[in-house]
Amino acid sequence: MSIEEGNRSRRRVVAAGIVGNVMEWYDFSVYGFFARTIGNLYFPSDDPLTSLLAAFGVFAIGFLMRPLGAVLFGYIGDRVGRGPALLWSVIAMAVPTFAIGLLPTYAQIGVTASLLMLLCRIVQGLAVGGEFTSSAVFLAETAHPQRRGGASAWAPFGAVAGILLGSAVGATIMNAMPLEDVVAWGWRLPFLFGVVVGGVGFILRRRMPFDKPAATKGFPLLQALRVHPMQLLQVVGMSLVFAQGFYLIFVYIITWLKLFADIGASVALEINSFNMAVMLVMILGMSRLSDRIGRKPILVGAAIGLLLFSWPLMALMQTGQIPLVILGQFGFALLIGSYGAVNPIAICEIFPRHVRCSAVSTAYNITLGIVGGTAPAVATWLIGVTGHPMLPAFYIMAGAVISVVAALSVHERARQAIGDSVLPHLPAPVNVAR
Image (tube, rainbow, N blue to C red; front, side, top):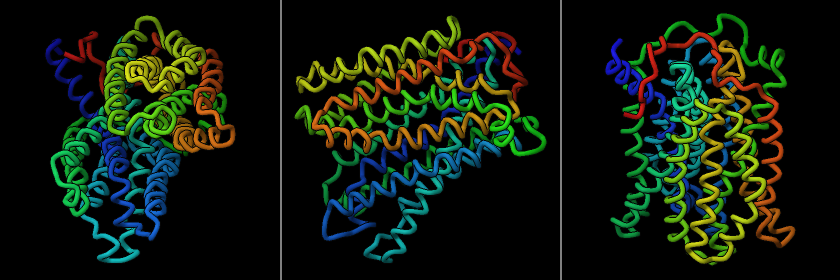
């Protein structure tokens, strides 16, 4: 295979791996953007706050379903194949997303509309539980050993890009249409547009060749629990600070800035979008650096950085001065982006191939679903109990301590083989970003 052919092959693999993450987080972003409208249309109440809480409650169902989806798609990935897991997960995300865009409202079919919305979110939550880690495993296993970190980083890159795409499409709809049209039907357009992303993902993954399953008998997750319990705990510990940091600093922060820094929602969203773009750059850069210097130096360095600087950075943001708010979140983007770039490949390298999808998916999604999904609620509770708006910083710092210990406890495997790959490795390192 020539270098040019290798580059084309690698680009197809990367595109197939990344597109599902764009799809899943695009949907989550769009749902959050239009949560108030969805609440009024599908969970109507005399109290608007009750409708909004109901909409966010259904949103949270997706997070609670992540561990179950991880078990399901992890099993498929190990016993049936990486390819079917990736193909079915993108279908399971795209179909209900498109369906949400077509659902009749509560005013048209009553409580059935509410139940159908709930069903869509359940299916999407299952898909999310299998998509991210399955794609990270697939990208790592198909990469040249010297480019494994940079390859697997396309999974978190796709997730962040999906959130930005959802925000951009939502903002475009809000700015281009009268509010009454948005409420009447315009909010449906981003969900209908999601079928385009899902369709591209289906086509790309349908055309990818895959070989035999990694495991031929048994239940891989049970084997991982029996043989690799310490490694599962390592994954939970390593993923902890990223789960806390990302959901607090890039999801909850919009509300926090409005309440405690007197920053309007539109300005906060602009700052947030800028620094999420910074994260994209960090993800690609630091993942490639990890192929040269190893995973542990970056993981430990970023976690120690969050331990030392979370409070000062959040203090900058609390000033309410726009340049300082940007600078504070920029610091978080550097640290969280660095950690999130390397964590996927580091946890993939811990396990042997025959249990890798099941073990990585389950441990990671338990952490992200429980710790990440509850992080905004925990932060709100801590502030309410203490009256101290800086408590989220200390929550991140506590997680950083655990993640440092977990990262130090694993063996460095950046230069080691991780088992038979799903596809043949390229004959030599090539530039996958060209």
